[in-house]
Structure formats: C-alpha cells, structure tokens
Image (cartoon, rainbow, N blue to C red; front, side, top):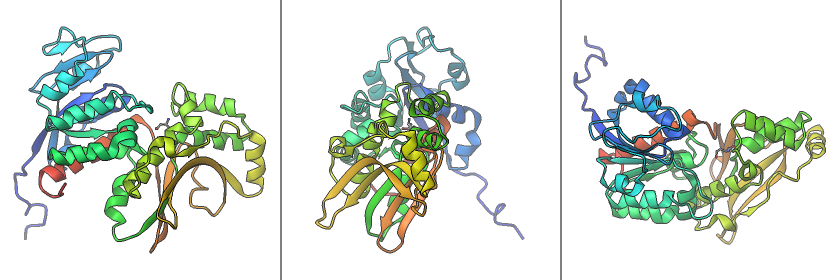
Length: 361
Ligand code: HSE
C-alpha cells in the first residue's frame, strides 16, 4: 500500500514571485542569503523567490528581469556600485524601479524615520499604486500611516504586510489576528526593545547605565545612537502599531506618553531585585472602561509573578490580556538580521495565501 508521501501528486505547482529589494542593508541581505542558500525552504512552501531589482543608497540600483545573481551582488564590498553591471546604475532610482521593475512584491527595508516615515512611506505608496504587494520591516510607515496604507492596498487589490515592524520575526501581529479569534482583547503589554531590556539586566548585575549601553552596542543590539532604544521612542512606535492594529485605536506615536530608562540608577535596580521586583521598560496599550484607548511607555518595577518579569537579555515579549484566557504571553527575538528577514518570509507566505485565494482582503 502506498504511504501518504508517495500518494502525493508527483508535480507540485510552484509559483515564482519576483522581488524588488528596497534597501540592501542587514535585513534584505539576510533575506537574499536565504534565497541564495536555501531554495528548498521556499519550494516546500509552494513558491520560489527571484530577486529582479535591488536599490540602495550606497550601491545604487540594479534591475535584471531574469533574476539577479545574488552570490555576485552579496560578494560586492561596501563602497562599490551597481554602475557598470547590465541594468545597473549608481543612482538608487527608487521611484522608477518600484514603479517599473517586473517585481510582484516590493520588500521595503530602508531606515526608519520616526518623524514622517519617509522615504519609506513613498516607497510603499508607489508600490501599492502600481499594483505590487509590499512586505516591510520598517516601523515608520506602519506607526504613522498604517491604516491609510492598508486601505490603499485593499483598494488596489494587493497586500501590505508588516509582521517585522514589531518583535522582528516573532509573530505577534499575525498570532493575535489569527489565533486569538473570538476573544475580547483588552490590553497589550510588552517588552519591545531588546537593548533596554539587556541594559536593565546588566544593571541588575552591577553595571552602570553607560557601561551597560556600551556592552549592548558592542553586541550589536543597540543602534549606533542608542537614544531611541534607551529613551523609549523605539517602543513608542511599536506601541502605536499594536494599539492601532490590535485594539482598533487611531493613535499617533506622539499620543503615547513616553518615559525611557535614562534616569534609572543601578541602585534602584539592585534594590528592586532584592525585594523580588525587576525593572522593565514596558510599552502598553489598554482599552479603558469608557472604550477609549490609552498608551504609554515607561519603566515599571514588575513583581516576580508578572508574565513579563522573567524575560531577560535582549529577548522581547508581549502579553495579551484577554477575556476568556486571561494573559497570553509570547516571547522571542525582537531584533537581528536573520530573525527580521524571517518576518519578511512570513509576510511573503501571507501574500502567497492571498494570491492563491486562501485569504480574502
Ligand atoms: N534596537 C532595537 C532593539 C532593534 O534593541 O530592540 C529593533 O527595533
């Protein structure tokens, strides 16, 4: 008797998606490496990925409809240019490439502007308006214009997916949407910045704030300018995204009252630990009894039995407060190039489900 494996059809239809990578820094390079090295990972999902365009402030732009040789471009040293390659230019030509390349999916991974979300907001709009799906890890466009961009995508019959905007590849947004159906979600509380959590942990071990920040920078967790990590503005963007996405709020990041950990002293942290409490930088959005949504970022000394108290190091976590299950908590990486590239893969899977009719807009 045939087993279930051999009974499967011999030929599985594999769809090819053409990608345009906008930004060729750590995250999109990690995605390109996975596509180069692990095609079987995608084949088992029922699709293959072909990169047909890359734009980058440093390298310029490269468009090759038959597929770019990823091994070759990944080997190019920083400081070199796509100029001179067939379809290459030293100019990023973002608008032209996004609107005219043969890409089905635009992968936006440029830097985050917390002020106006640009230039990423324009990248997303150009892509959607020219009929391309967008997957992004960029917090700026989602925190500042997420609702409008999602509507624009729905009106244009394409997907706008952004799992990596919060907690990199750890599936917070999709998990809440897909797995918490039928529950009333009343609050979201999280440790949403790996650097500040790492720093607070090291202060528990006796380091001063500045020493702990220097360690976090050396380990690659903190930004080159760690103000956004320590001052809470990175978490503010993530809280705005979670409040709008999961609690149906319509808040701007500026509406999120924000205090960072810059004034926490090593003595405060050590004293709290002795009493069984742990200081954590907590981002929170909550539905109040009058139905309004409040959101904040602030350091809180959590009791040991709180679901977020045991989250250590650069790990992130989110705890959902639900009516039937109480607290549901998910923890995992919140940063890292491969971890964030995985968020893009999970977004491409969502695009594929949509394209194959498994999910309605
Ligand atoms: N610097 C951020 C962190 C990276 O430490 O969590 C992800 O936004």
